Image (cartoon, rainbow, N blue to C red; front, side, top):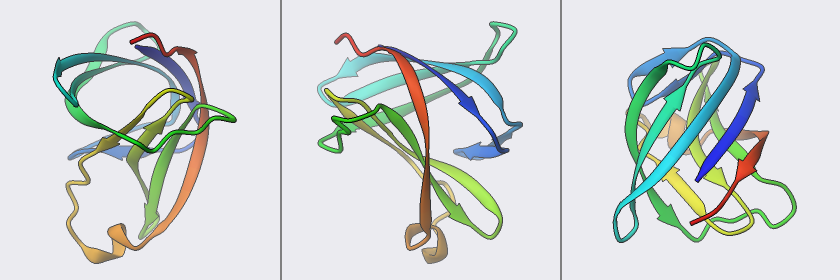
Length: 113
């Protein structure tokens, strides 16, 4: 599966913070509901390798990336498509992130599994 996103704000995935911009995410199934995630910057270079868990959080209307908003930061929480949803680990275990507001950014791409 591959999706493209133009993220208008700085954001964090795991323990790494990225500048806003255009990114491509490629998800590859490792085992059952566990997926390897590679994120590439505008220059085509891989900037992140992590994992995500496939879950039932889908968005039939529009594919999107969901970010938890806490203490002025945006933390990647979910990727949702019409066919599948993926949950990313929030490294900050502070309850303020778990209970924070969410914002989403539309994505496009091929949700083929």
